[in-house]
Image (cartoon, rainbow over all chains, first blue to last red; front, top):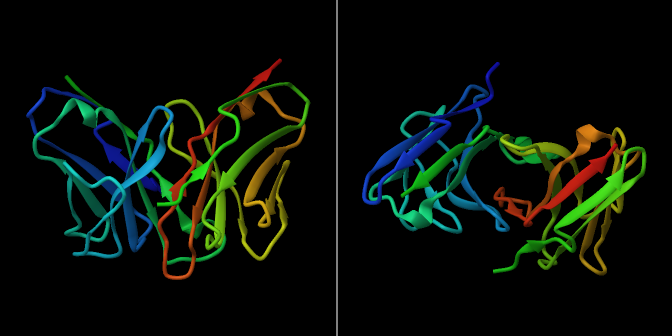
Length: 115
Length: 113
């Protein structure tokens, strides 16, 4: 049982390059999320999805796009990377709301550096 | 928008002591709170959670206290161990049909042997 798997784990991009981060979950969770984590800022929600074929903006969506073509996958795209997007990106998934924990499971993160 | 914050960015304790990590939240409508532990190079890991209709909830060596009057949340770790060294985040959500979490900035706990 892998849980939430993120690929790649590390990446260095040049300004203006594009890339896609992949998140895969094997728990049949409905909800999936992309967060970014910066020093002193905690985790901030970029985009999220409440089901296959749906996406929505979070707190800091600018410069990112997402797609959820399959229930188990949630892709985060950077069309033209900027140094301000240097961060650690975490994917999470959850089952429909409930106590405890809202069923949140996080991946191990992708460390992205834009030079 | 309203956000969740922490009183102290760092906390250093001796092994065996009890640790208390604090969190202030500003959204009185928040219904559900979660504490996460994040070790270096890893994703956040669930520790314990509490609903707004509760004042206290206990787990294994951990207790979460909620004071809605002053919008304050705390995580107590009993007999702190070196393996407890990590960054601890609180998170809140409005509950109901809102499943998105808002995270605090985190507190770094260091346990000295």
